Structures are given as structure tokens and as C-alpha cells.
Image (tube, rainbow, N blue to C red; front, side, top):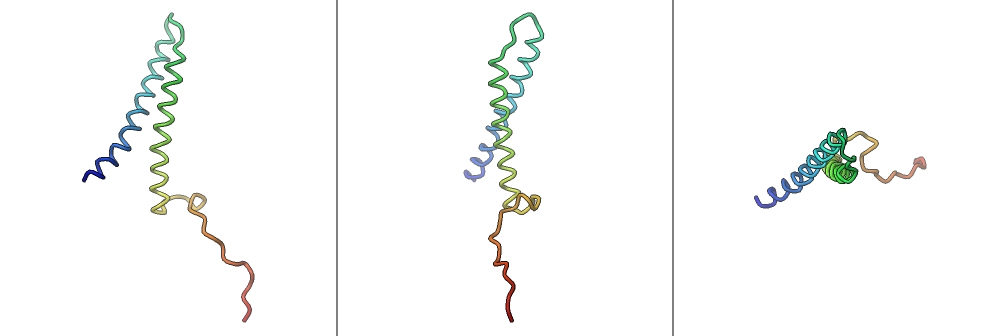
Length: 89
């Protein structure tokens, strides 16, 4: 039970970070439309939070789908090839 709770937290925390990053970017853009100077720091922090959170969740989903063989053939794990020489009777 505790393991599942930790697993959910590992997905919720990056999701919250990505959401907060998106909100920071949105607020910075809307504040930049006014007479105040453009808040580049908020945009940079928001972009980092958004992309890191999104990349973590996307990577987790990709890893899970790859393990269950739900991905396209080009993303499947590479298997060692058999020897290409023809067999002799």
C-alpha cells in the first residue's frame, strides 16, 4: 500500500510542477502586456518547471508502454540479430 502511494506521489509532484510552470508563464505574459517591464525570470522558471515536469511524466509513460510492448516498432528494444549466414544441410 505504501509503495503505491509513493508511486502516485512520483507522478503527482512533477504534474504539479508542470502546472505551476504553465501558470507562471501565463501570468508573466499577461503582466508583460502592461506598462511594467517584462518578467523574464518568471518565464524562464516557468519554462524549466513545465518542461521538466512534462518530460518526466512523458518518460514514465514511454518506459511503461515500452515495457508492455505498446510502442511503435522503431521504439522497441533492439534484440541481438542472429547470424546472417545461410545454414548448410
